[in-house]
Length: 190
Image 1 (cartoon, helix red, strand yellow):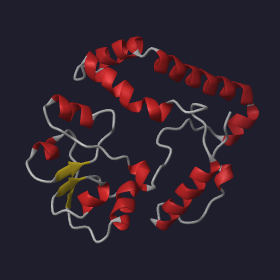
Image 2: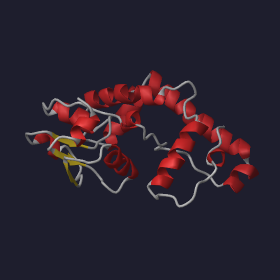
Image 3: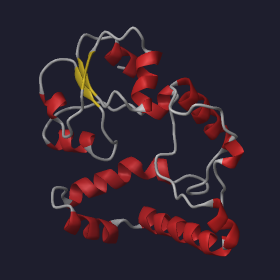
């Protein structure tokens, strides 16, 4: 029923154990009773009988599994307390200072693109499906629905300092970074 249950069950969990979110979950649910194995991609671990689980993207593996007739339950790591920004537009500060209008225009273009996608994803799906023949039109629709709440925020792409503070503390705890850094200097909303 919960992510904690998975880590406390004598089943198999396939994940990339070196990633920070995996370290976070292993510490949060220690001692882990499940057997942790490397994630190899696809849905192979949840196709096997037993209490098995694997990492995946909300917009991909669960949809593929359900299409294959496998009933799945998904859990967001963010709901457990680890919620990094996984996709960011990064620029050098000196470049931003030199031409802020250029980067404001870029952010506005990306934001507008996401707004258009949220209103009508069909054209984007058509292009993506031409590039990714392994996903059919229905799966693209389901993927769009699954990610909508993650994208459609009051200001698309806006970052929050409190979220950065938490992430920096977590990265320092797991020695992903060596020293504490100033959260407010890690991002700039445009």
